[in-house]
Structures are given as C-alpha cells and as structure tokens.
Image (tube, rainbow, N blue to C red):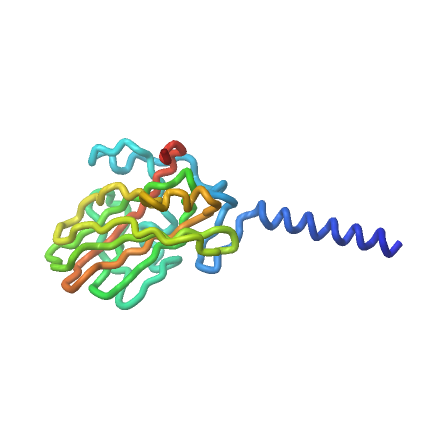
Length: 211
C-alpha cells in the first residue's frame, strides 16, 4: 500500500512538472512568458507601410505607454509624458528619455519567430550622441540567456519611424534559437543634451525572418 501511494505521489509530481513547463510562466519582471515563444501573436498590421515596410507588426504590451509605466522599468529620469507620435493618433502619451536615463519595455514574447522590432521616436533639438538599444533575452523562469547590443539610432531629428531593428543581432542570432521565450528592449540615450521620446513599440510576428 505504501509503495502504491509513493508511485501515485511521484506520478502527480511528474504531471505537475510537465504542466508547469507547458503553461505560460509568470515573469518576475512582468508579462507572461510562453514556452519557446509558443504564445506569441501570429498576425499583425502593416503599421509602417507609409515608410516602405510591408511587414506586419503587433503592438508590444503597453508599447504605446497608454497604461502609464505599467510593465516598464524606468530609471534616472525616464518618464511617461503627455504627447504622442503624430502618425497613428492612437494615444496621448510617450516615453521621455533625458540624458543619463534608461528604460526597458515590458516583457515581450519574442522568440525565434519574432526577431524584428520597430518604433517611433523623436530627438528634436537634442545634442546627444544617439539612442542606444539593446535586447535582454530570457529563458524559462526568467533566466537571462544573453544581452545583445543591437544598434544606436542617430539623434537630433523630429518624430519619425525608426529603422527596423533586428533584435537578435548579428553575432547573437543563436540566442533566441537556444530557448529564449521572451525579451525586453532597453533604450539609453548617449551623452548629454538628450531630448528623446519613444512611442508605439511594435514587433514583427512573421515566422520566416531568421536566415
């Protein structure tokens, strides 16, 4: 009888472990992480068609800052402010990034099928050295798999769609393939005189991007 109960208990533990791996994992840094990106959206809209980009994108969680700073990590003066990018007219807020500040998006489902990110930004009148963007990749249980220094955008310009960011990076393209379930996109203005604003962070959900 004791042996039978022990087998039942062990079987229950095994089932619970499998269920825990199969279900989305609640991230300590916010957001839900699907197993190897399995819960990522599979469709989107051609948001950037006016800029010659016919890819379809989905809005990242609170990517438009309309829920305030919910899910974002804001440091050293980064803040949600009034004022929206002028193209989509989809809200009334954006992210302000003074010099010395850093902001990271909520957790984004961005596995091997979602390697591209695009957003709107402005640095009108700014005199900094640009906006540096990096990607922190997470695996199951929010384990950091790696960090990609993705690119730096030139400053001193008014609102515009920023160039398509390959979030996997050149040499780090294997990071999402080796079990990444999600990522956070981090924005940091370089140097002094920053007047950066960021709004409407989108992810490309197409499945044929890596190659």
